[in-house]
Image (tube, rainbow, N blue to C red):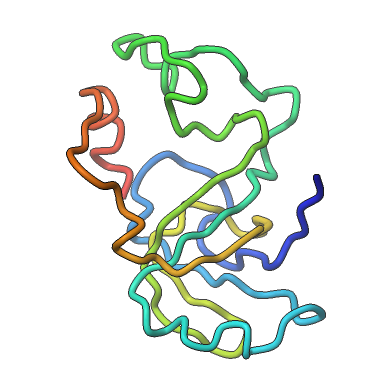
Length: 151
């Protein structure tokens, strides 16, 4: 399997931090050698985009495959890597849903993207309400507590 970077995050934070991502503004700059502005035609009709990116700052030696306490918090349960959204994932992939502020040429302006300056972007998709979860939703109390100040 081979993935090719389509864009790079420009601006926003330079170092990862866990909370207050809603205030961040960044640009997703498409690769001008491979894409033209037509690849973004119609995107501004959507309010949000989903961004698939690589946690490029995570050292492969720090990747986790078992269970851990989210953020190392001893008050939270030991949960498997696939039961949390931490960055030290086996393939180091991140997915973020953020507000679309506008498009200017090959620059996609967003708010609330939880990726840092220089992050390789692997895909960009418009958010459609029908892709939201169907039926009742649930999550454990620790996840609600963890996300309280994330955005």
